[in-house]
Image 1 (cartoon, rainbow, N blue to C red):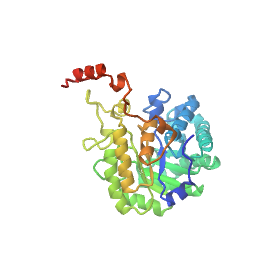
Image 2 (cartoon, one colour):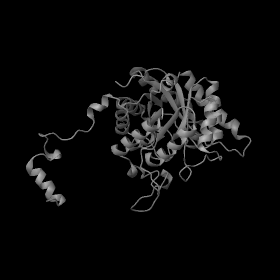
Image 3 (tube, rainbow, N blue to C red):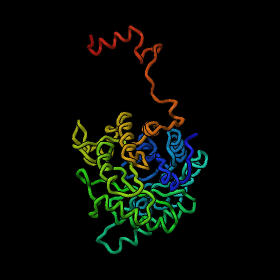
Image 4 (cartoon, helix red, strand yellow):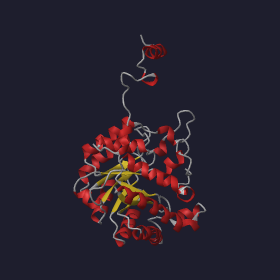
Length: 352
């Protein structure tokens, strides 16, 4: 059905074989009407698990090399705040079981996408222990259900990333750790004050399998950061950008505004900033040129964007069969090949 992995995470990284990941479950399922945006928890896992499985299969069909358990913001603390605390065990186990099932059926890697706990505070001496407990509870399930590796994503503090890596090592889980570049400017720092290059190199030195950035920024404002990181970070890099367009006027999605109302686009109108295939292809070309080993899209992702990325890397996923094609000589109506339609279109556009 999908692309077959050529080995585990570490083997592929060592072989310099790029790994294509597909995140963005939350907002894609919200777009389809099966998850709630804004509070950012995987309600679809509880209410519509078949839709989560369908999307996982779609991402593999489009070219993803790994199936990710949809456990983003599924700690006891976050679920409790959303009134779902009693469902911690059910949600986390079910999400892992869905991803594992599809991964085993398709010969792809099995992973889980954890994120920040919301409890980290470098000025609170009680914070590290609470953060450790949250990660330990989730990773115990990941280890029991035998993920091939763990993804710990969208972390705003180096300190929390280091704690998460510590727990991953306790469970002997290879870890891909990505920080969220949410701060302003062309080269933001972590919220606890570390330069990105220093934070990422520290994490590699502490035993992370791969490090990088995800979320907060679309391709146009993420790629320049990676051009600089590649010069200084000695180890595998991961880039998982938004599927939304950001630029120098709005470097992160937190700054995107509606052109009609001026209201902040995130979360309810963020889809208006979706990128197309052209920007996705540009993104892939830049990643290849820079030499990034773990690539993909997170929030704003779709099967189409994953397919575009995979094909730009020279892959031929099953979904490539349905990639857009230029109209042939016999194409009618939408291809505007018949003289009458061509003339009507020319008249409409004001062409000669």
